[in-house]
Image 1 (cartoon, one colour):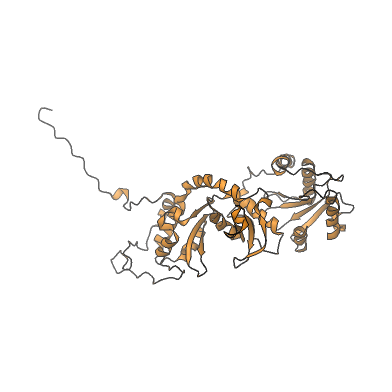
Image 2: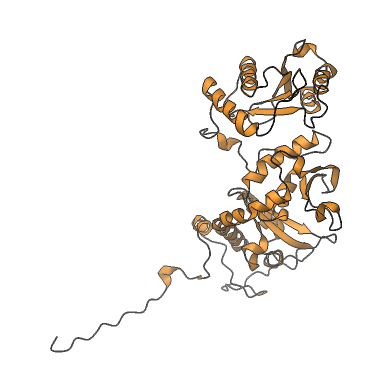
Length: 406
């Protein structure tokens, strides 16, 4: 209620309808809307979960009028057996695609409860397909404009503590990130989540959470400090617990193997074409190619780890997983950067006519690199053979000398 009503106050949402209420939506105060739910939920105090928050999302090209949104909401609620429940419908206008939110309770007028187990997977999925057919809506699997708001990296906003309902905001991010990206460890997952001010936390080694293989999710402030109350993984929709995440690691690793070459070649090419590479310059160049570099630093701000998040293939790689030359230390050496992130003595300019760096003795290419080879570099994995095939000298086969009687 707070989340949706705050959106209304900000002018980016409107309460379209109050169904099974004694008054219309525009006649109800915040407390009247809330009390209606609280009064009905009190009829069954043994139920732990007594409220439901639903989001119905449409294609960006579909700008539906209010009356149609109301009919869609009513049909949807009937199809999932919530048509007789009190519910509120809000239209939100703060995202790249139109969507509505529905708030209701699963406690009936007689005190019995509506079963929520697999509600999204079964009743909701069936209702969605029927509504798409009835109203001629674009299906997610067929929509040509799906890419417009698909994860790129993810069409969700950073979670800001105190600005939205914590659990719902965290759940929204996790529901997009966890199934979409391929990661093989908790710190690889956190490399993505931290972009949205969230971290998966096992607690200290001495904590009960750690000893019991538990997991909580925390919100981070702008200084990466954990703020607010932690949310247990088991209390979140789809249960992103440590056990469930670890079950994905093996399959994720197998999937991402074929995508290593893109990241490695992107790094190699960026460093190759840059006369004086720096770590920040590398990070910025890779970002333009859809690859985010996440560095890990200790309290002394020394870099001890590096992770690459490829938003194009949705694969996450720890530096050492790509190879020794892509680890944190190797990348700093290749960028001429010290362990604390400071740039060391820059590369010296080459002498006229020379093609070798006077500082580190590595082969340097002239600045007039043919940019047409970029695509090929990003497609093919470097094999270690620096000589083009056409320039290799081939040995001539000796012809057998024919004898006089042949």
